[in-house]
Image (cartoon, rainbow, N blue to C red; front, side, top):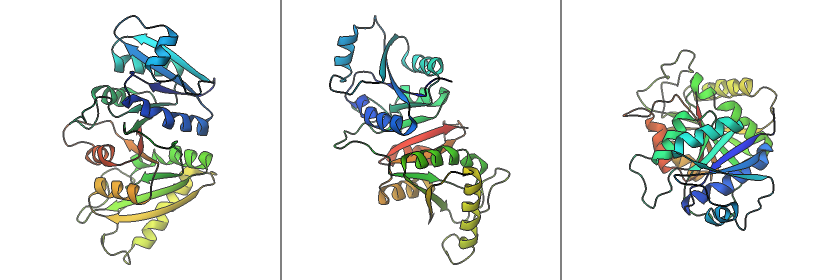
Length: 275
């Protein structure tokens, strides 16, 4: 295999550029090159004009590549990701001036559905300082699906020297996830003295098995309440830089309620792994 790469779609808007510092930092952690892709509906401009349009004049472009393509944005981005074998796609949740009522902009949602690799969603809010990966938040409900996010989160934490914070949210009246092999949540969600210590030990044991020989700093926080708002609250309290979540691929209607809430409300970037 060749050098790993991160694909960064930019449409020329100021909002879309917010993905650049996140992609740059993740590229350094992964030892990956950045591939900027710009999709338009007309003949691509000259490279010098494109660099200016994308706001890359002052960027350290060493090791970066810029690809201009013509086509429908989401399909063209997916095609580019497959062609270069991208390890990640990093893009903003939306690039318009108005926040979309559907949580994600049309292009971001289409890319999330069809991406051949994990997608990192970045808030378009401007950044006053370089983005760094110091703390990773890993929501885990005890299910096998959630386990899919453990390996990537642990790898990033290890490579970046970041802390991995595992958060489990228990909701009163709701037991274990329906998936076979899920870890049953204690009956007394709001009483940590009942069963939670042994449950925490079993969950961390499972995580240790999933991480194999990776050495990392990890701790567990247990919260009670609605998972989406609680995950967002912990992310804010702990100043998390990245939330890593696994997703089954269902988005419409009441599906992915927790994921939608976290994507919309959490102040940090989110890495979504489509299982």
